[in-house]
Length: 318
Length: 227
Image (cartoon, rainbow over all chains, first blue to last red; front, side, top):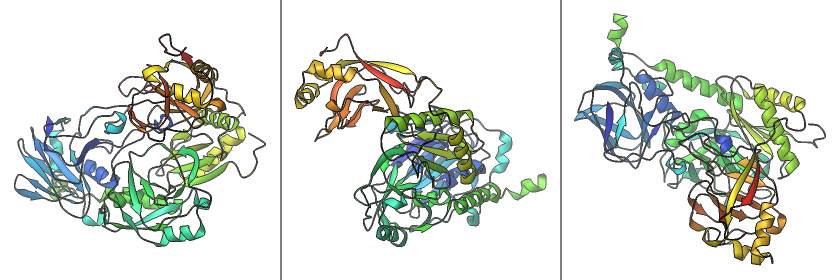
């Protein structure tokens, strides 16, 4: 049982939740650019959150099935058609052997996750199926690839039609305000620059990828240079090198870095950054403290985990 | 862990999922030894919700799952580890020997670097093979070790024009550091030799030759051009 890639998008790779625990050896975690869409995509087809999905980004893609499957597509910036029939995002549906799933790029985001009941059964390295070609772990998908799928229990077919209603979906915007936790190197920036960072607008440049999203705006000044003794880096960390332009660390980020960090994007808002408009999106930051960020994260997880509505007739049958 | 001048250790949250512990803001062998004493001590007393931590030259970044714990609990845990940690690690660091073919095509910058320091190529090799280096931290690419202990007489600036291709196993010098490229990559280090030892293998265990805190020695391989 496989997914057949008939047309690959500019960036297309298998992602599960990534590999934890190897950062001390210099190997980054990887994992989805949009953790909310990934989580919802798995839940809508009855998978556990660790299951591997296909991450599709930036341009059109077409995928064909060689068996019946329960699928969903979650994320932003795409329209989905199965053969000629439109299917909404954030809804699970049954696709038949031979069906073509067309993922057409539109505005409003960059990434979607195609998930199938059972999960993708592709190669695993160091405890994860997440692909990261830069470090010798798999490659981007190309036309003609076959991605093996785990078979799924026929009883799961009853999940077809499950939906995550809009009010529980992330509030994607082209120009998001991102909540972020100040520090850890706040004291390395001039007071004027801190003021600029928290009160001005940054453009999201197109020099952005799965390693980092580069921002452009009024340059930030350091008190005593941008360098520090190299230390571990964290997902969502906003590094400011000597040129004063911030870079946000995304899932394939290097594990260590030697530049000051002005703030860290709250996990709950990281998907909003992932999906913002590359080249044109305007980003603003709002400061919050760790306990609030933690609470927001819990709420966001809860919304995905409990917000899904299952098909009504199944409720009646139960 | 006493006699630390204030304000270290400095504990600062990095987002809602990590805590940065800074022991100093300089690179120093005794500080680095403290990092690894703490690293093994923390391993004995892991608490729920802490997923992993990443040692640096003079820091540790502790990662945790904010759905299971929170920063104040992790902070208390670290402070307890700090108070109770013996000053020297009880763990014996692994000792790893790296046979290197110095000079020739595989160490294209060796002669030039030796000249810059007014020494012969074989004196340069001798100075590079004498120290016991310590893996101060790992990062940059998988398996890459930042080695501490280079003879200051060998410190050399990076290449003005980085190479677009440096083969895996290349041994180089950049500033006051020496290291080995784990993967084929672009690079600006002065290349003095090459080893066949694999530093990173994603397909077979052990995936990484080095661990942070290990001790490393370079030895002259039999086939080395410069002996």
